Length: 486
Image 1 (spheres, rainbow, N blue to C red):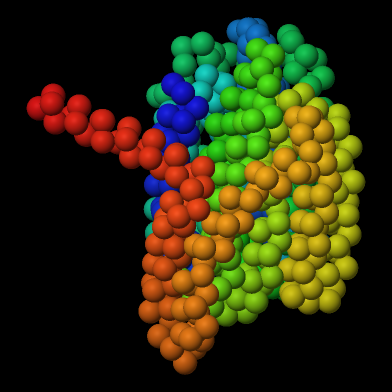
Image 2 (cartoon, helix red, strand yellow):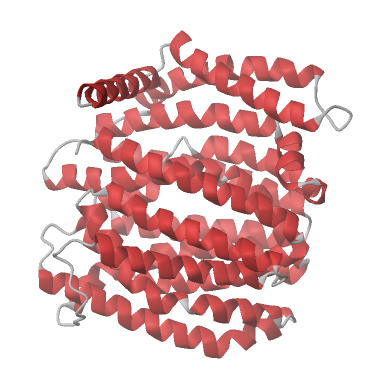
């Protein structure tokens, strides 16, 4: 399967999952208060750090290693199983310590429920890694989509029955059960669930470096929950998390899809000794062409979007969304930087750079959390600016390019961003605010943004135009084949 076919197949399933998750988030936001969601978010953030210890870079090793022998795969699974089950025990027994730290017994409940995931995840994680390595993204999508559907049903059902913050934790556990069930159905025959530790040292020699990167990155990402929960309150966690969730829609459902396909693709090109310069620059052009109009739209439509989707209880998140949209706009100029450096074999450089950058971010958040939510959002704009400057310098050096060539890759997207958001800007300038119908603002603004983007792609002749035409052509060919077979 070609890189485009893989991306389209995986994207289709990813977007189905997006709508499932998005609908769940919207519904849950009206069933639970910001404080209740904040309790779950903090508990999930604590468990997320344990997840980084669980993987130890094992799945990345499975995807990247040149020769994946059965004995090596069994050792990877054995390591994953040993570490995961040990962490499940530690979390379950030590959950009360976090409740004491934050003076809230609800945290222990969330952590203990989520600890159950660690008993199940090894079976699904090793299967996902092998499927990604073999670029069987349709099966990857099936596994992920089954977890999303089951998790959504359980979370909503339990929230309706009054289980509050715990409903989200039980939904997560149900999703893991679904993932494992699907893993047994779609797994390649080469996978054996017979664990071994015979070649564990080979896996750990790679995984140790990846673990360091993952831990610092996760600590940095989860630090808003940790510090807001300590210095402010659980409602603040909920408001900040809702704003960040809005901003991260693009990275979660677009960038992660592209990254999941490009990582094994770039790793394969490196193994074959092929150049990746043109691929990287083309990806930058396409990603910024997709994301820049989106983030401008999020900035302009923050109020009607939050009010329509989540209700008046979440208005506090509106200015946070607008500030963080600026940071996201900058950050996409250096796309998939961590996966790119791993795929090109620069693990040591990634570790050193990431350690410094994440320490800076944690410091910014620590100070900002003691000031206000607005300061928290501004700290992420400062951090994004630093990340882009540092990682782009490294990436351009790796692909033997320069800033002039990079600016040339950005120029089509800059033109597209201006052209595509001009109608929306005019609309918002005359029809915006609580005095107007928020649903009309949301739907009208969204329609103008979508129409402006599609028209802009063809007007400025952005490279995305060619991708759209390829997709349309391939779709029409399939339709014709389907009709001829009837």
